[in-house]
Length: 421
Ligand SMILES: *Cc1c(COP(=O)(O)O)cnc(C)c1O
Image (cartoon, rainbow, N blue to C red; front, side, top):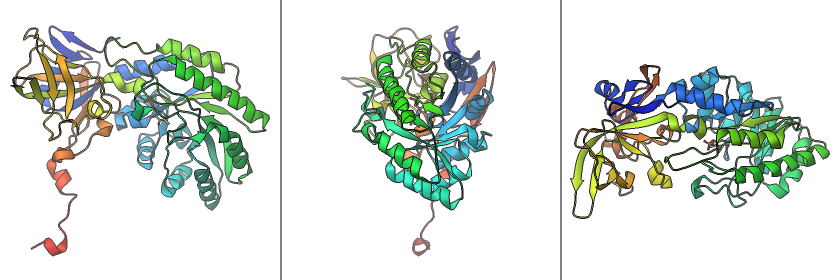
């Protein structure tokens, strides 16, 4: 179902007009469709119904307590990559035994915290980390459940900044070294091997890289079992892409599910999946107001009140995001616009050379597909407070994160005593 749609020229989310929400909440703000998230999770799970599987939502995509609650209530576990994310998952009521701890650089404190929290599995990223985990588990007189994150050297054919499964990337243990590392792990007293994991990248828009990586890991599992290791779960990571543009055709969830099922049916291990973007990406809008429309001889700029500090994907990845007038009644424009923010950086933009219907000062614009890797990457650059998040559910909505106030930021500073006169 489409929860974000125009009704009488006005953009709605779950049957509430964005204009109504914006009349009571100052822009910019994020808003999400609760039921889009529920539908995506259910579709994902259903596509894998033939095999024994468990979904661990990748918290880094969007870590708001309400979002985690929606998913925990549906039975999802959580995949976390920092102590902060672990705290958020636990605070949302997720049990340690439903949490996987991934992450390429875990500090000793984070490893202790994960072990104390009895997380279901730590995904190990290097030989030295394996030793550290063993040491910390030994100090806590316990055994740590681990899987080794293997780097299958597969090109995910996605943006270079979110490709993680090639040999040159910083992630995981080199494939050719995995047998040796498993042997080492099995010799360590406070390590308990439970599985194997991969994650080859994000926003992957064809099945081919997945297929390659999945076949590699299936063979590896046989080899590891032959070597005498117990592999109870196979963690396939996340990465399934979504459509940011109406012309994009990422693999359907059913084809993805079929691929996973056909490769792993009968493998005798639970299949773990760590989707983030697929679950939440298209649930969200960033609502922003036009400050000014500025036309120069070369170009027309729509300057809005959201900036790259609120939403950095266009700047960081050159990502395409649709920009829609919330009220679409000013007619069709033949002009092309750059939609830009007020931050003092040329890189502060949301859309370039975009055909867009007319808007004017005060018009609202919705930036689409911002649910994943949106608010979680926001910053306070230019002393801009983090904006509010709103969750919409069947005709009602609530604020799920309050906007920061400028004093919240300033009050963290202190004036050094020798300057205070
Ligand atoms: C980022 C990440 C994910 C989620 O990726 P998506 O593309 O959002 O599905 C899953 N697992 C790990 C280890 C990650 O780092």
